[in-house]
Figure (cartoon, one colour):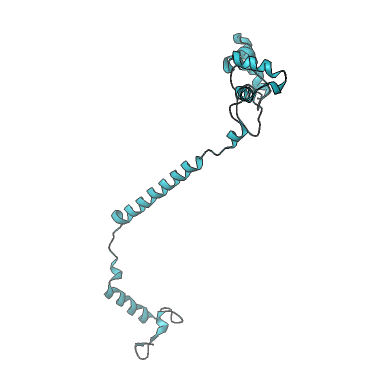
Length: 174
C-alpha cells in the first residue's frame, strides 16, 4: 500500500476511535499474524511464487496450541499425523496441491466446441432458409452457350484463354 493511503486510514481510524489492531482483528479473527505477507496486508493466499502468507490458515484451537508447545521441543517426538496437523493449521494446500492441474482447459474446450457447433448450425440455417437454394439463370445450358458465343465474338483472352482454342477461319474448335 502507498504511504498516503496508510496515513489516510490511520487518520480515519483515529477520528472514529479505532486502532489498527482492532480493524485487523475484525478481518482475521483469532488467527495468528506470522509475517509480512505478499503485500503487507494481513491476509491468507496460497501462492507458489510467494509461499509465506501473513497469517495462519486456521485459528488456534486448544489442540493446535498443545501441538505448538510440543513442536518447540524435539521434532523426532512428533508423529507424522501431528506434523501434518501442524502444517494444515498453518497452510491450506501443499505445493503439489497448488501446482496440480485444475482441468479448466476442459471447460474452455467445451465452450469453444459449443460455439463452433452453433456457428455451423447458423451457417447451415442461413444457407437453407435465407439464401435461394436454386441456381442463378446464368447456369442454364442455353445461357452458358450464349456466353460462350459472346466470348468467342469478342475474342476475349486470345493468347491462352478459351478463345485461343477456337479456329476463327474455319469456325471450329482446334
